[in-house]
Image 1 (cartoon, rainbow, N blue to C red):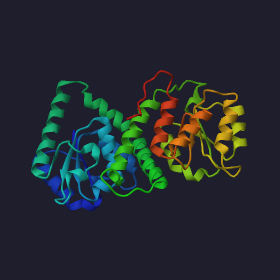
Image 2 (cartoon, rainbow, N blue to C red; image 1 turned 90 degrees about the vertical axis):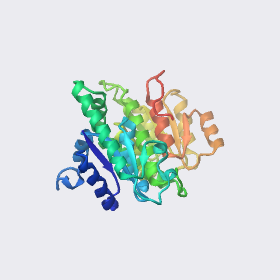
Image 3 (cartoon, one colour; image 1 turned 45 degrees about the horizontal axis):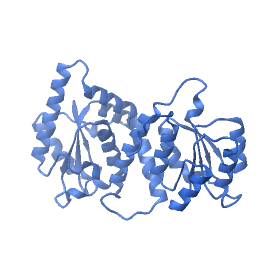
Image 4 (cartoon, one colour; image 1 turned 180 degrees about the horizontal axis):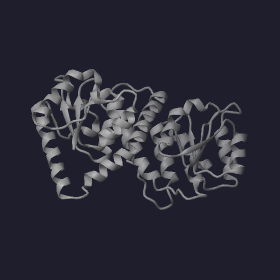
Length: 331
């Protein structure tokens, strides 16, 4: 049972201060310096997380805006592993922390942080001794199995959001907060898509038809879905999309609106589909998020319309779930 210290590598002196105190208290921790050159970094990180029962977040101006720190925290937070926040930068206010950590255990005194970590590690050791299989063992196992895809999907979701929006800095919009939210969303979406059937003949439920004449604009969004175990067929035109639909079944369809064929091709495809297929979920992923466009899309028979990657992931995953299942992705 060890401690994982989430930090920006630019805060090495502060990191060493934390490890000095942990060593004083004989608390084991994962050492980034032990990373083996040439071996998979992701694989070594998975092994590290498997052994970690506590996370210390070394909060500085750099780490709270780090996408990777946000993804790491999201993995631990989503799995229910305790997170202790060490406010290592004296000028960093508590409200600068990712919102999901505000109000949790935090301290500006490193001795208190180390003592808290030691107590949690010792408690975990006691539980492991008394129980052949402790609850945290299940949590750790789940995190190990999902961590690589979780972090990959969360980073892709951050990049997708950054590519589509330009938002001013703020307590809820810095990269660290965005990445933490993304990691939580991807973890919940992973839980949801795990309900989809893997039986032979049911593969189509995990397959999405994405219609866009500029598919490179959606690379990051597709990477998020791929981290959930979903696959794609790509069509650059309405005609090619209809050809796909004539020969294959899909769990969902995502379409842009304007293409080289015309400014309302998304609706032309949707109308053609609904003439014979009333049930396959259809989503418009275009440049507008205006209420009138959402209403118009619904009137044509779409299940959703958005220009936000977060909303798209949530809506599509919800639509893929079997009927009558409760949504696991909505906040």
